[in-house]
Image (cartoon, rainbow, N blue to C red; front, side, top):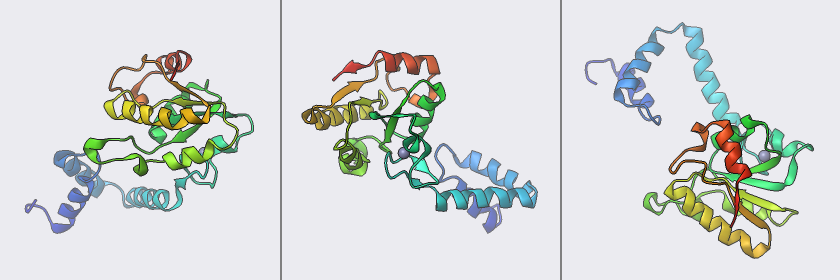
Length: 198
Ligand code: ZN
């Protein structure tokens, strides 16, 4: 990195911290940014700063929102007695895109992973349990079918069962290890329709 000015090296190393960006991509992005019109760079940086400063967790479902309560939780048209539990906001978006799911969500922001040292207290489970004290008919567990996703599903089902609330798991139409966000809508809906009782 010594071939570059310290400013460029700094930009490259900051970009390289982003997920999925290796040193080579970081270099390519850095040079692209340096050649971009100044206003465009300002737009990009201010979009990042304002998103980071103004977006927070929905007080109800923990998804990312600009408001206290996200539009899904605020909607009277949604079935608030059915909660689909997903690992992240991208998985929520995948199901929302189908336009067929009428319930609400709960976003965990991760999955239990003993290997990575992520325990139940590190994801938004406490918030889920609080919601279950209200009128809830069903909890649909739609965590990924990875080891972590399955471990999380097991953990949640054990937590929910004693409450008497119906617990289901989306069907295995979702390929093993598959991230929900990469799966097509038909498969997502089939997985939802074919959900099984836990
Ligand atoms: Zn919400």
